[in-house]
Length: 96
Image (cartoon, rainbow, N blue to C red; front, side, top):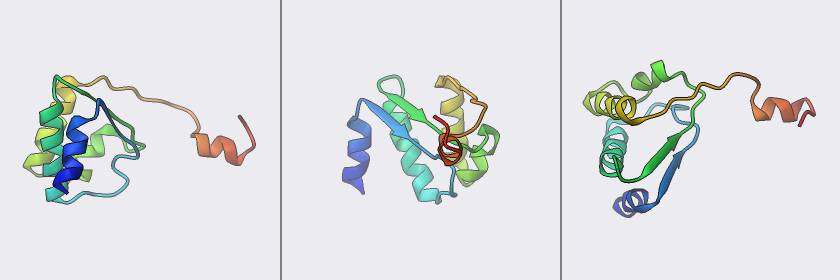
């Protein structure tokens, strides 16, 4: 796992998609906090989620690491809320 974390630390943009689809362990939240902390002010992170931001803390387990992750994101992020149908819904209905 350390080599995977090292790769996350070194990439120029870290993209996390479908964030919050399932809850994470306290170890995973701690690892994410480590990566975010080391990237802060140096490299970009983009997180996409269908879960409302207000529910992210719960998805992260609600512990100290979760609090710190939310704090870092709130202090350094741009948040975009998108409305409308998802791409999979459009494809299902034959729309482009």
